[in-house]
Each structure stands twice: as structure tokens, then as C-alpha cells.
Length: 170
Picture (cartoon, one colour):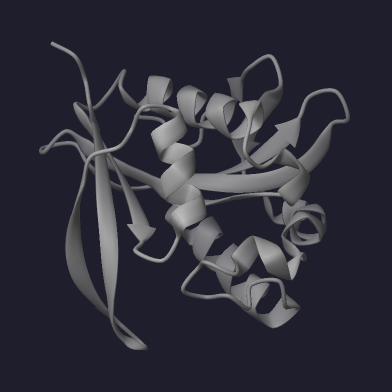
């Protein structure tokens, strides 16, 4: 499976994250309100964003989101936890500039990524913090509503994660 495809829709193009995307992606991420429901709510600060960006580069599955009419980078997402034997992958670490929230842009981005992944795997997971109601609602808008809860340990102790799944239709 190609974890960094170029995916083209009517509104958006997703392409592999490159080092030279840093400044434009940081501009898209610099609004503190984007990160209020995330476990790492300081990603609008350059130092925290540097860590986020470096982690994204290391995954080899990160994509930048470009709005087609302006050619502007408006966010990012990534594929990770690819397990060919289990036929599973996770989509996450997604953000968009606020002016693109709540509508057709997130829907198209998710559909492009899901369609690509389902060519290669049977199950896609989305991991959302239990407090991230905005992302939970965004998944519900595209028909992804059922989840189970897991507790994960991290540098802050533990966190409840909602795990949503999409399965390939037989």
C-alpha cells in the first residue's frame, strides 16, 4: 500500500508531506482554536508544531491538504499503524483550518483517504480523544458513528480514546 499517495478530489488535493511544506502547514496550524480539543493543545506554538511535523515526517504516511482553487495548504492528515497481515490501517492526526470545518472539505478529505485505503485493507480505524467532540461529530456526518473505548498510557498518564472503524464491504 502506498501510504503517501496523491489523492485528487473536486475541492482538495492531498499529496505527500515534504520538508518544504513546513512554513505553509505551520501557518494553517497556528490558530489556537484548532487544537483546543486535542490532547496536545499547544500545537499552534512553533516548538510544539515542530514536534508534530517531525513525527508526521517520520511516519512516512503524512499528507498535506491543499484547497484546489487557491492552491493553499489548509491542513494535514496521515495514515499510520499499517498492518498488512491484519489488513488494517489508521487514519488520524488530522486538522484543517477553521474556515474549512463542518462541511464538504473534511468530508471529501476523509472519503479520498478511506477510498484509497480500502483498496488495500479491510479495516480502517480512527482514534479520537474522548473530549474531541468536534472530530467525533465530523465522523458521524460521514456515517461513521460506532466506536469502542480504550485507555492508552502516554506522557500525561492515561487517556480515553474512542476507536471508530470502517470495514470493507464484502
